[in-house]
Length: 538
Image (cartoon, rainbow, N blue to C red; front, side):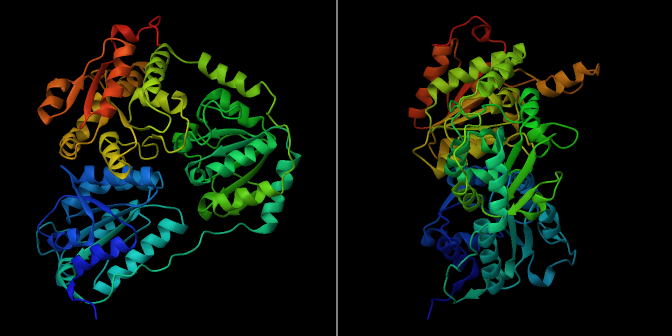
């Protein structure tokens, strides 16, 4: 017979059974029962300064570890504060479990003015999640947790929100905290595999466009590409799926003109785990392709969206690619062609002067960041250039809030990533505007002694919006900001700081940050003299 404990305490044991070792959150009066059993279950709690930070940390943890990120939050304002990171995780297919309190069963939907009350809390997050439910009993808590992990492990990973009423949190629970078996990955249909292989065997200019859903199949993507000489173009989420110096890899994503023309001229295009959403291609409509199209995705809705495909395969990307590769005859493709090198050169020659400055900074940062170092980036111009031209050697080493496009992502996400993998060097690229959305999480980084290299790109404005206004002859209203002294602010939190005056000093500051016992804010002004053309990068 199991010991009778509160459902909140048993919940922690259930999470542990599913492999959860860390939760992000801020204790509240309505979630106390979850905290009662946290230590006993062996789960680490990372306290945040704002619930938005908890959500982004869970996202960053998931992207680093490949496991679901988990946060425990209060009802009402805790839910609404976390809605933005939940939306970000949804748009980027990140597994996240958000557990919150909600009013007691007898008070649900009654509108009595209870503390933190939302009359239909699940409705707030339902459009942002794979599912959002309220567990009205301890048994339902188990059901929904099992359903969430089945989704994370076998379907398209997206956030799940589980609301637990106050009386359920406190309810006695004497059942074991068992992990239920989850669904298996979907294998491809043999006839579809044969059809895909036939198309690729006949191709002379094959192209693979790999999205986030292809990242777990990085080895299979490489093997297939090398077998038939296929060019590999990553979306932002798949950056590094082939090393950027691989002869079949295009370092740029598919949102640039010369690359889009290259795809248009391909005689076969294999789309793996990608929506080709607007932030991937920046076109007013689908990406033009005249060759045959093969599409592999775990999400059946994606398979039929936007493109008339020749083969649509609902399957796990690893299983599908391995099965196709077995049926392929070795071919030249682009193996000995100059086409990829020429395309790389064309894309670099089209860089604007500002983008050229960005590339100088990115190349310097790459000199200091090892191959397995991970960079979390914000919505800032340096990162916009970086997702195409930062030299990635491995997948899951460049993270960008592509789909939802929220400011303030990078710092808390990097905290989550560093906690997931303490031995991995972690850097942050954030602009002065986005930094001020979540800079309070510097306190979390200091408290947990996380050696983050935080590169603060400061142009004293919302520069991307400002530049868009100028280009359209619109008055620059609301984009030129008064900023604090970021160095003093960071030092007030207990951070180290650096203000490099050369590329050598920038690289030294990043390396020193990785070796420190806490975060370092590296303040980098866009107009710093050493960033101008003609300055050498050793």
